[in-house]
Length: 355
Image 1 (cartoon, rainbow, N blue to C red):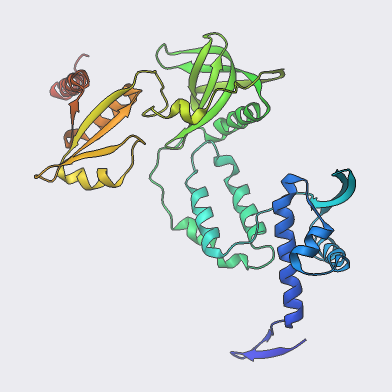
Image 2: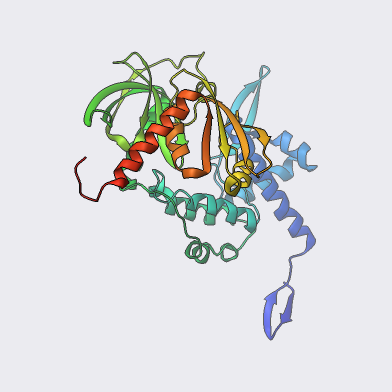
């Protein structure tokens, strides 16, 4: 082993190129196995041809991967075109090694889920990120995730009970994957009561870190959307399978919706954004149908949308205050005027006065 001195200390020199080449090939084989594992694995012959070595060398490499690197492999015989072939795959998948900058970006995306239904898994994700992304090439200290976590502050709404919601969310995901019915205890805001429903889960929607279940309600015999944090309890019915409708497409079903409500009624809405917010409005895509129709001399812009679920859109418009004006349709303009009147009446009276 060769050594060299640096800054008064003794460091290990780089390994010979031959060993470096072997190390690189082993990692390439692991990455390839990881890629092919979901499809049943890969044969020794395929690996030999891919990396330009003999099949005997591939067998030695596979032994090194298992015995030296501790990566468990599964060997299975499968018929291919009438002939039996031996396939190798990973016993468990892993994240391929990536550079620290990309690993940091992944970690930042995880931090965004703090206070959501996924909160309970964040520490597990962080540990897995460190142990797998840096398993072969990098030093985990390069990521400095703890320091980074202390220097990132999120200004977001959070769930009051993220752990409880997370457990219910996991049950819903399981029902979604396995196509079995679930019984829900759901708080209906319009009635203020907890109702019981048996539903067939079709999909999940995420809006501003809040999750919604799209499901076929057996009681209503129609598709309904349930906000996950308003679900009080979930009882999976693993014995009651259902057939996912082949003609249902979640993206298409929600395509026109402003938020999570699809009421089937689509309208063309024109909004005028005042100069102070025009630049920001033009740089954001709030809906796929969004189109800038006109840029006015005073710096304001007119943006048109073609959407359904106008009830949700009205609450979004209110957030802009006097910076946004509804131009079309007339009935929506009138509805916003009445809403503004009600808000005015609340603040016109003294605090504590009657309703």
